[in-house]
Image (cartoon, rainbow, N blue to C red; front, side, top):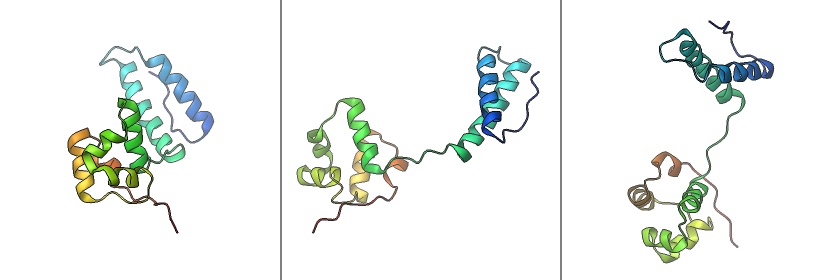
Length: 124
Protein backbone atom coordinates (compact mmCIF):
# COMPACT_ATOMS: atom_id res chain seq x y z
CA UNK A 1 0.00 0.00 0.00
CA UNK A 2 1.27 3.43 -0.98
CA UNK A 3 1.79 6.14 1.61
CA UNK A 4 -0.98 8.48 0.45
CA UNK A 5 -0.79 12.05 1.72
CA UNK A 6 -2.77 15.21 0.96
CA UNK A 7 -1.87 17.12 -2.19
CA UNK A 8 -0.93 20.62 -1.05
CA UNK A 9 1.70 21.76 -3.57
CA UNK A 10 2.54 21.35 -7.23
CA UNK A 11 5.33 18.97 -6.18
CA UNK A 12 2.78 16.84 -4.29
CA UNK A 13 0.55 16.96 -7.35
CA UNK A 14 3.34 15.81 -9.68
CA UNK A 15 4.26 13.00 -7.29
CA UNK A 16 0.61 11.89 -7.15
CA UNK A 17 0.44 11.84 -10.95
CA UNK A 18 3.53 9.66 -11.08
CA UNK A 19 2.11 7.34 -8.42
CA UNK A 20 -1.20 7.03 -10.23
CA UNK A 21 0.63 6.11 -13.43
CA UNK A 22 2.21 3.17 -11.60
CA UNK A 23 -1.20 2.05 -10.32
CA UNK A 24 -3.14 2.17 -13.60
CA UNK A 25 -2.99 -1.58 -14.15
CA UNK A 26 -3.98 -2.52 -10.60
CA UNK A 27 -6.26 -5.53 -10.22
CA UNK A 28 -9.81 -4.52 -9.24
CA UNK A 29 -10.39 -5.05 -5.54
CA UNK A 30 -6.69 -5.03 -4.71
CA UNK A 31 -5.06 -2.61 -2.23
CA UNK A 32 -3.39 -0.97 -5.24
CA UNK A 33 -6.80 -0.40 -6.85
CA UNK A 34 -7.94 1.23 -3.60
CA UNK A 35 -4.87 3.47 -3.71
CA UNK A 36 -5.68 4.34 -7.31
CA UNK A 37 -9.22 5.35 -6.35
CA UNK A 38 -8.06 7.49 -3.42
CA UNK A 39 -5.31 9.17 -5.44
CA UNK A 40 -7.74 9.85 -8.30
CA UNK A 41 -10.08 11.60 -5.88
CA UNK A 42 -7.27 13.66 -4.37
CA UNK A 43 -5.94 14.64 -7.79
CA UNK A 44 -9.40 15.64 -9.01
CA UNK A 45 -9.95 17.81 -5.92
CA UNK A 46 -6.55 19.48 -6.36
CA UNK A 47 -7.17 20.11 -10.07
CA UNK A 48 -10.61 21.57 -9.37
CA UNK A 49 -9.07 24.01 -6.94
CA UNK A 50 -5.77 24.86 -8.65
CA UNK A 51 -6.16 23.96 -12.33
CA UNK A 52 -9.81 24.83 -12.84
CA UNK A 53 -10.80 25.32 -16.46
CA UNK A 54 -13.94 27.34 -17.02
CA UNK A 55 -16.53 25.83 -19.28
CA UNK A 56 -16.79 27.48 -22.69
CA UNK A 57 -19.59 29.91 -23.28
CA UNK A 58 -22.67 28.38 -24.96
CA UNK A 59 -21.80 29.60 -28.44
CA UNK A 60 -18.29 28.17 -28.19
CA UNK A 61 -19.82 24.88 -27.01
CA UNK A 62 -22.11 24.87 -30.06
CA UNK A 63 -19.22 25.68 -32.41
CA UNK A 64 -17.13 22.89 -30.86
CA UNK A 65 -20.02 20.44 -31.28
CA UNK A 66 -20.40 21.50 -34.91
CA UNK A 67 -16.69 21.18 -35.61
CA UNK A 68 -16.46 17.75 -33.99
CA UNK A 69 -19.36 16.43 -36.05
CA UNK A 70 -18.61 18.15 -39.34
CA UNK A 71 -21.70 20.35 -39.10
CA UNK A 72 -21.98 23.77 -40.75
CA UNK A 73 -24.02 26.92 -40.18
CA UNK A 74 -26.75 25.54 -42.45
CA UNK A 75 -27.19 22.60 -40.06
CA UNK A 76 -27.50 25.01 -37.14
CA UNK A 77 -29.96 27.14 -39.15
CA UNK A 78 -32.24 24.11 -39.52
CA UNK A 79 -32.62 24.17 -35.74
CA UNK A 80 -32.87 27.90 -34.94
CA UNK A 81 -33.69 29.54 -38.27
CA UNK A 82 -31.50 31.10 -40.97
CA UNK A 83 -31.16 34.67 -39.68
CA UNK A 84 -31.07 33.59 -36.05
CA UNK A 85 -28.22 31.14 -36.72
CA UNK A 86 -25.97 33.89 -38.04
CA UNK A 87 -26.85 36.27 -35.20
CA UNK A 88 -26.25 33.59 -32.57
CA UNK A 89 -22.97 32.29 -33.98
CA UNK A 90 -21.66 35.86 -34.28
CA UNK A 91 -22.83 36.54 -30.70
CA UNK A 92 -25.05 39.41 -31.80
CA UNK A 93 -27.99 37.75 -30.03
CA UNK A 94 -28.27 35.44 -27.03
CA UNK A 95 -29.81 32.01 -27.04
CA UNK A 96 -33.38 31.97 -25.82
CA UNK A 97 -35.21 29.13 -24.10
CA UNK A 98 -36.72 27.85 -27.36
CA UNK A 99 -33.26 27.79 -29.01
CA UNK A 100 -31.81 25.90 -26.07
CA UNK A 101 -34.62 23.35 -26.04
CA UNK A 102 -34.25 22.74 -29.78
CA UNK A 103 -30.46 22.38 -29.60
CA UNK A 104 -30.65 19.98 -26.66
CA UNK A 105 -33.31 17.90 -28.41
CA UNK A 106 -31.70 17.75 -31.86
CA UNK A 107 -27.99 17.68 -31.01
CA UNK A 108 -28.02 16.33 -27.45
CA UNK A 109 -25.65 19.05 -26.24
CA UNK A 110 -25.97 19.04 -22.43
CA UNK A 111 -28.26 21.81 -21.25
CA UNK A 112 -25.62 22.86 -18.70
CA UNK A 113 -23.36 23.89 -21.60
CA UNK A 114 -26.05 26.15 -23.05
CA UNK A 115 -27.46 28.02 -20.06
CA UNK A 116 -24.31 29.85 -18.96
CA UNK A 117 -24.47 33.60 -19.45
CA UNK A 118 -22.15 35.13 -22.04
CA UNK A 119 -21.43 38.51 -23.61
CA UNK A 120 -22.82 39.54 -26.96
CA UNK A 121 -20.98 41.80 -29.35
CA UNK A 122 -22.06 45.41 -29.27
CA UNK A 123 -22.88 46.87 -32.64
CA UNK A 124 -23.40 50.58 -32.97
